[in-house]
Length: 253
Image (cartoon, rainbow, N blue to C red):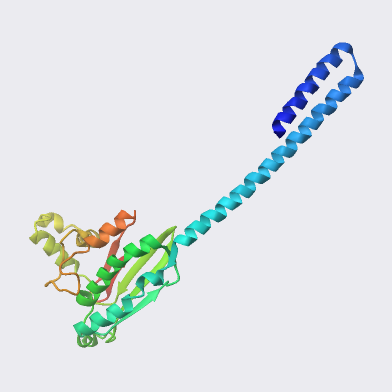
């Protein structure tokens, strides 16, 4: 409505100016000039109001965005609250002493991601308890503390959620993976011999691939780490393994 009024004002000013120029009427020319100035002032005021409105709208939309995001976020600790008891029960069943530490329990995580993380974390932790961690007697002989330790850590890194599961167990023998790869005909021996550790660890995420000597109920009944890989890749994420024999293993998602 304001723009229409300005347009009318300008039209009248133009007509008055044209008529005054034809008649040589100084008073009419001055009136036309004043009308143009009033129209310019009005338009400038409207532009300022509009800019202020846009700025307020942007502030409100940003606030709403953060409110919506915040309503979806849950502390990481909510999704892993049942793991310490699970570790105690599994360790007792295996005759091992294991402590689970959670770092970053207050880190906010999208509730859907948090729900989907439960199964992969459960699998990795159970697998660590069953196959990765040694018994107190073996650890004592190796000069390690009798109580094994698993750390689950969550933090934000480069705009993404980083979740790590670290244990101080026996680690993964890359050479055993290399032998398994050749035995199963997944790679010829000459090519397998040239694979580095990271390339060998990638085989752990293939369906059905396992280096465990026996299948147990505790660590997934033979279900491989492909469940971890599937979940992570379905959320546009990545997963990698780092391990050193005798020192432990780290899964980073």
